[in-house]
Length: 604
Image (cartoon, rainbow, N blue to C red; front, side):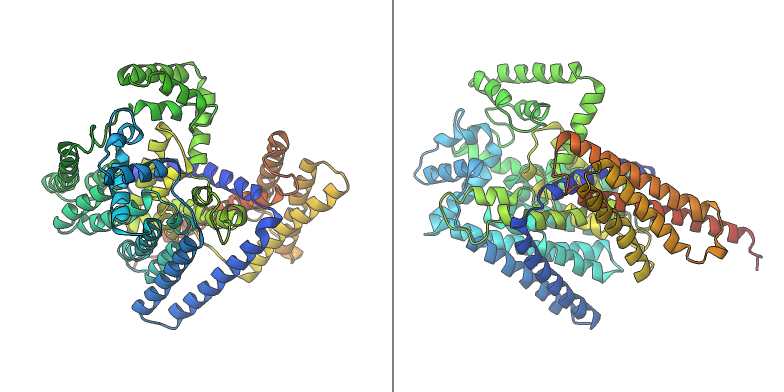
């Protein structure tokens, strides 16, 4: 593992953990009776499908059969959802849809002056896309949803293909990657939303697939990769982050000559930029657009301005919107005013407060299990019909799915053997870092990170026996019973007796720790008090009590969720911390044992 990989993974071990905490707290906020039945029913169905898939893999069914099975599951799920909701485009998408209708009638006002598409010309691709469907189909919204379903289902195949390249020796991971993609809530729910990401994501993924093929292979794949990324960028204009990630992979991780590296980089850049410039020139020449696709009548500094607003956690807000309205028509004055206000906010805010703001903004960007898909889908119903209101019924299930994915993604940061053996996998962590930095600088919305929600799938799959350690049923039962059931039961019993919440949760973990120690030391005659048998359990107990007390105290102060629900997210976070402690201290012990053994080996 090179120094850059160590830096990326080391940094993510620190900043990724708050995402897990925030997402877990959000899971607690979604726990209510309205969601139990839907969550239980769908979870049972997922487990049943997962069991069938497991049996198919175990019995050696053909790759084609297994892949078709997974694809059909994902396709049917997406089609059923998309056609079960009668909604319309809203917000930015509604404006694009209206302008598309005007465009078909020969009215180009929406692309001119300070109208919305002129201010944000990166939406031009969406307008033209909508125009095509409105021109061809009698029921364009239904057709758009069907195409969304097809494109989203294709993602299943593409991710399977990427996994086959990345995890060469483990076909099961490719199946699991496809299966996760088929069920991943944002990729399913957003098929019912008329957003640009539905068109862009397949091209982003295909670009990554061909890039990996060409990294140490034929240069023609780099040409294809750049062109595919350009198409994706035309619909969702954040492809520049992938370009930077590609450059880093080429120059840091390949052992080719500098000349070859430069050539490959140029192939990507030129096949990305030249077609994009050509499209931009044609649109301007035909009089459709007034501004370049990357620079509208509203300065990009407005997005950065909103991204620095601490009162709104870097999201859209009335204060900054008022400033934009104040300078309407004078873009240069608006840009200067934004820069001055950004400078004032950054220079006058204490460093500690600024650090907390950006850490919170970073965590909030990746906290939502469906990346606000249900919100955007349901918001567009507006009197129409909807079979299942996923915003009211599905949030708990989606968040639980996502928290599990986040935990596995976090554990993968410690999988050193994987990075040494297959450095290609680091590309997904670099992509995650790139988009995280982008959303730290600019305005933040849950939907914005949907374009790369799939990175979590690859990160979660990048685990091995080094990070996933299960020592048997007794170990699992002991962990669940003593680390979850006893602390939670103790908490509810003590709080029912009007004992302080913080004290109750602390005593719960104290009793659980004592029971666990007794359980593991059943043969008291052979107990050896040494650092490995005593300090680790003691450290685990102390950490459990500190973390649980701290989380309970914070919740009492800020009232994030009901106090009666708090033990659930606490159990998840404490369980993860204890797992990391035990697994990686054990890894260090095994490493020491191997070193001692090698010292005493007699040479042959």
